[in-house]
Image 1 (spheres, helix red, strand yellow):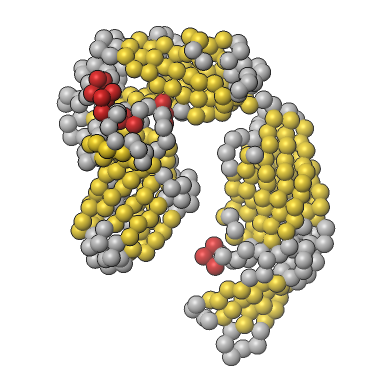
Image 2: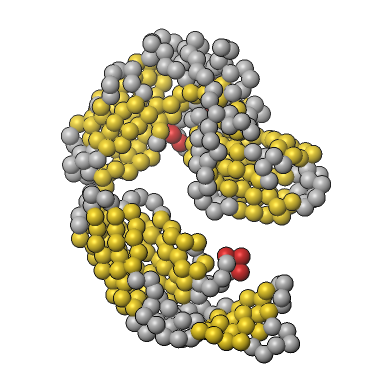
Length: 427
């Protein structure tokens, strides 16, 4: 097996004070440690795709979360091309945050394009000089980009490429996940992952050496305690620790978990943070109704509700119905114009709502009562034809119910701003 490249830990500390330097992610672990590169699947989409037409004059495009920016220089493309950036699940060794699929997949460029990742301080508990950019080949293997430039002032890491594929920011050493949320008395597994690259730049997870010793701490207390939560491991060499939250949320309710690793040649530490929540959930529910595909951008009716869950009691308040927003859209192919109009109540118009919760199954069920709901009127006018109008009837209203998981993060049913959709956001 090829010898793994490492920078000395001292070198890491020295270059960490630089503003803009060539960057080579490194590990403070013995040189004799080895691993085997393994292929991974391509991640599935986790957020909206951004698409932009870019031609020979060049241009730029950013991901929907603004964590990745792609700059295509003048002359890199011979013809105008639809360039897309799609956030996807990240399976890269040591991957941080989302990976990004750049398309058209396999697109080649006459000049190198610039791929820039933005990061935050102490992401994954690592220092910036430990970060790199990885790309995935057609066989699923991940490789280190070897032309990395890091800027600790602007907090960016940049690489160049002559082709498109999947790209990810990664860290040589990190606790995964760095940020997590658990309920009181519940648990989450934390793992120290160590990554290196071979001479051919294949990325791989390292196999820990026998000389590795690991200590886990919660708020400075080895293995924690009943107040801040406890950590359990299989041995002092374990790279995986199970954190169990206390039966009462501490104040403040975010605890810091530190992992201190020691090897015959080096010591290093990484940090993670766990937010502890009591038996309470607080959400805002937004629901909308439209009458077209996303590209035509029909935006029609909308409602907001505040939802509070305390143990097994669901309280719904502050219902805000919005009047319909009539829209007019022209079909470019047929030159027909469709106009949506209707009464002031719209087709949702919720007047009351109730909810139940299944704590064991972590399922939230919401039931809605409507009043005065009315379907929109759709009037279509085509050239050399009389207008045709349909709809406008009163009905019982929709939807009658919705179901969501009791969990952190935004949940979206349907496609936002198109047809019927709902969006549950923690508040």
